[in-house]
Length: 410
Image (cartoon, rainbow, N blue to C red; front, side, top):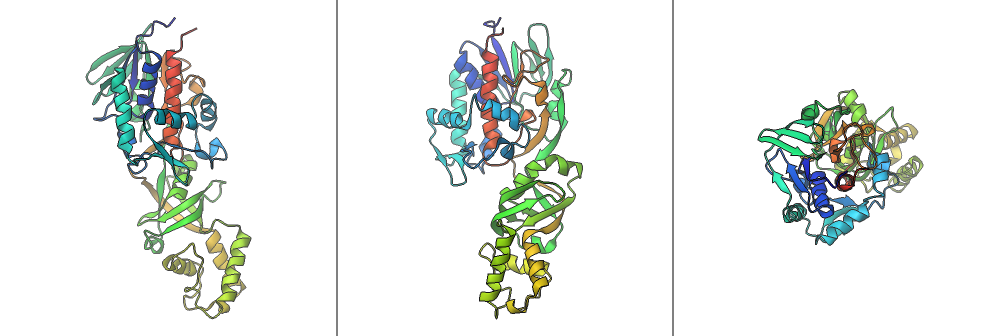
């Protein structure tokens, strides 16, 4: 069969959906492709990602394992990267006329530092290839009949030979209601990539303070994350906190976002930190402990950490005894705060959960029990930490789904 393929419906005009549309038309220019988008504009999330600069992928140079960046879906992503990797994505966009740059943190951006360059380029390719885009069109019910799919929307019916669902992540299961009459296994949805609300007023007074290299962990688990840490008026944010929120998304949801969070303020071995403290005390024995401190901190944060260690701000280094030094060391390596809730990270909402990967063909992303129905992007149970990894998953899965859709049925 299919050289019979005539019509493809793609639900969701985000990164995965738009990328797949372009790839389908590249492989099969004769096929009619219709993009259905409930919002007013396609690629709205791409336009704001990376603070409006579009962190579209990562060099993966610092990635030790796929599990480190894809807490959910790492095995699948490892397989799919054999078909379309971060290197392939880099080449794809450069060949499309977009010059890219890789930052020191290995995040890849357009040289223009403007997300709209990515958006406009993709939309130009979509329109040039003849893809039809229907905006403000909400998918209400998807039905599978003998030889076609029927999509009922708020603006009428659409019919297609194959359907790709690429609706992105959702804060609740209502985003998947149009699939309700189909036998699709869904993993419970939980937010990912959020900052932590902490109940310590003294810490929150230090809002705006950044520690370039810190480690945040969830006591009682092996989950931890390193990176820059930002103190905010509600608690903590920054790459370290956001990574931990991704790793611990499901555990924290079970705890209703009430838990202890431990901060290691210096990303060094405990022995090295201990030696650094003793060197400070020897070289500055007559000075106040609040006046001399590691370069990683500013005076306000150091004063807070001294207070957390139950050391007087007027104390001299030479007056600290072994117990004082041990308390200070413990504060620097295991400073525990109480989390009282989560705070959404900007507008870059990411969801863990979605369509179960067990229900999909791992090579094509086609639903095992609904021939002709495909899934790509965050609608599946795949999500990543910050750094361009979520968009890379969208490009990879969009490409693989397009290949599957255009492949002749056996």
